[in-house]
Length: 128
Image (cartoon, rainbow, N blue to C red; front, side):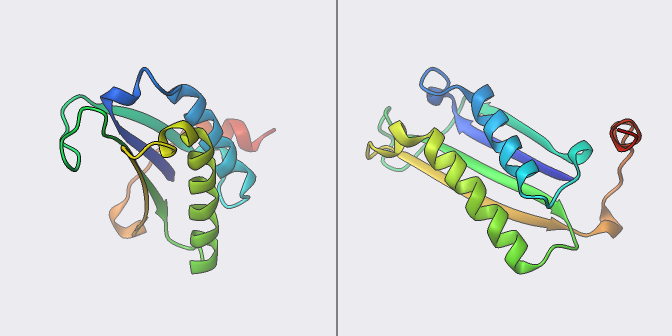
């Protein structure tokens, strides 16, 4: 675990390369040194139905949620949050230059007592 999900208004699909955003966010997570390569997941999901602010058709959003397991300090969580926002802000610079875009990030820490995982990727990557 860490899993980063980006939900975004469908009207961003034609304005932004979400695959490139996922790659950039993945690189940011790996370069932080906080996460094992085999655990990192980044995904982007369009929201075809949404209502934003004053309902102008130009309004759009990207909402990022990073779910991580326990064990990282508050400073480490703040550091990865700031790094992910910086990456996303660079990607969405054209949208942020207009008064119709909202970008958010929340980090959620998941208790190991309530998280089950089976990961066949770890053994392969750990032997490298």
